[in-house]
Amino acid sequence: AQSVTQLGSHVSVSEGALVLLRCNYSSSVPPYLFWYVQYPNQGLQLLLKYTTGATLVKGINGFEAEFKKSETSFHLTKPSAHMSDAAEYFCAVSDFSRGNNRLAFGKGNQVVVIP
Amino acid sequence: NAGVTQTPKFRVLKTGQSMTLLCAQDMNHEYMYWYRQDPGMGLRLIHYSVGEGTTAKGEVPDGYNVSRLKKQNFLLGLESAAPSQTSVYFCASCGVFYTEAFFGQGTRLTVV
Image (tube, rainbow over all chains, first blue to last red; front, side, top):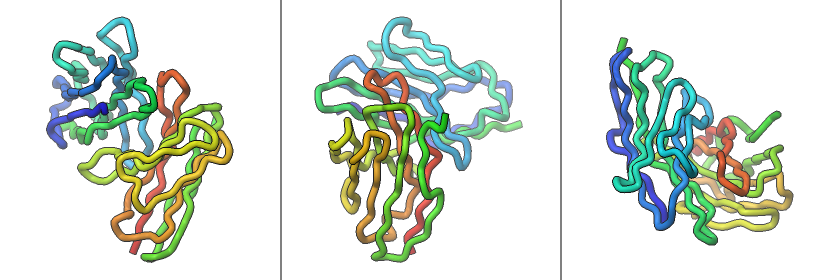
């Protein structure tokens, strides 16, 4: 079964600094990978996704992530943090194994942006 | 488009009471999911459905039941609520090729 590891439940970043959130996955088949963002008291919104093709994926709000098969990673980055980036971020993985049509989430990173 | 709609948005139950959470999607998606979100635990899958009339257990199914009698609706039932079921519940739906899962706004349930 697929699984996701996100380290560091809380991440503090200064406004204007690099945002880096790490995600490592395990999957028995080539995965589809996702990053979701959750703002307070809201549902989850897709930031970006990797399915096939180009391994560097660009998403909304200036975020991007790179799929590295050799490292089983899909780290999320943004060059310059903005106050509006304060939210919780979830990495997720799915695979298409027969009878395993499920999306597995990491435990999330709560991002705090310091002025 | 409404997308994924969950009702109710908030509910307080007494221990032992029962209730049903409704999830409705208008995107003709085959797959639907119920997750619970607890602090520091991320989202954990309760039950899911890959099509009308089919359901399957996720990683934390105990104490919950589900039904999917119509393709657009996925119901989550609590037969006898327990304080451990205090959580935020999210429904999601997804098309066949997993291009994106769409989430509802959540139901905040408190069991006292």
